[in-house]
Length: 548
Image (cartoon, rainbow, N blue to C red):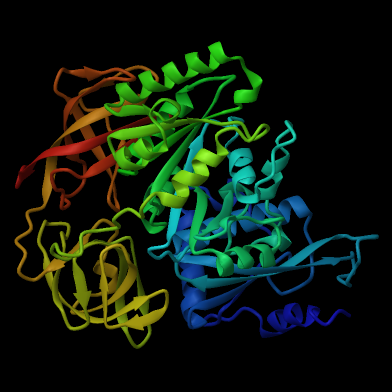
């Protein structure tokens, strides 16, 4: 028996216990375990296991509930890891390591020949996937399927040209036994960096952990890519996860042979709704002639102007202008080909020199919208989220709310936890868990906000906004009720367009009213609304305190 099998045997021997950190799963599937209600309950279960293990849980996949070796196919195991990764993200954790074994029908080890299936042990740890600093920028990528997003990123992180068949895309199709930090093929992940003296620091094979570790060790600046707006079932978590990932820039790809699509418009709207400075990369330039390239660039420019953004062609205006001008309003456009490597040096220079964006206003008053809550034995109620502004310290007196009736409750900060390490204080942009006195965990809900005791918050049921409809099968009439995602609020709200209706692609003013309860909403906040295939974005322009 291989020595490393002892890890599996120890986990099975420990078994599942009510207050333990080990969980057995035969397999996890998107259709069953990400269905309505299941995701939240399974994420809560994972959170319980992590807390029971002092910040670490062990998931054994490919075994029955009583610990019997079952073994599942490689595809089923890969899907299970994708689902587990999503559950971990929902619970404020990440997959830190995965070890797999091939087993035969009798549960014995197999070395390929006669292999019956795979059994694996995943270590899940508390905290966000990426831990960033001033020399680490994180880029969220988006784009229509088959527009070359993963291929482009694969060529950037390796420096290798594509073979014309999407070969470099495979660098991001991470296999279960090669996973690192819980990011699988469905959440394509890549990292490279820059040495201030020697230039780009890339990987020979991103599948190897040693290669990634070498980049982190040698680079003076790191650039990470996270696919933030991929699969439709994950969009709700994606919207909430954007802040948690602390993204600095968006990278939207548009294929030259296809041009902007409906999905392109939707993804652009979501990136812009998160207030991310964004770059558009026109990909597959080698597949079309110059006339077609010029036509696609004009289409992209029209798309951006339609979203009230100013396009900036890097080919015409240069890299310096792109670095100086990129903002929420100005969007650089770069023409690229992963086959000929055209444009990749331009992207290298941009990512090497672009500043890290502000993650929050430290000087402003403390504000944190609650993303999730849990109860810790011996500590009590804990509210977690990303600090939107200001600083919080242990012992601070705060307000928590609004409650169902619109009131706020006085609470005190018992302690602060950041990446499962106790800290005395935390500032804007940090993801924290705040243990609170004077409140039960059952009374804390997602969408509530923590504020200084001196604040005078006025929760609202109604607000006015400038909205843009990204996609809708017909038209939006008065009383249409999508789900509004604003900060960590996810609530059904009725929309009343100023002109009576809004069509796909329209931008206009509207009044929105939360269906069930009030929330703290402020002018300037951005939001996404969605219902089925219908999607839109908006900006709060006015609020109505006390509206009934």
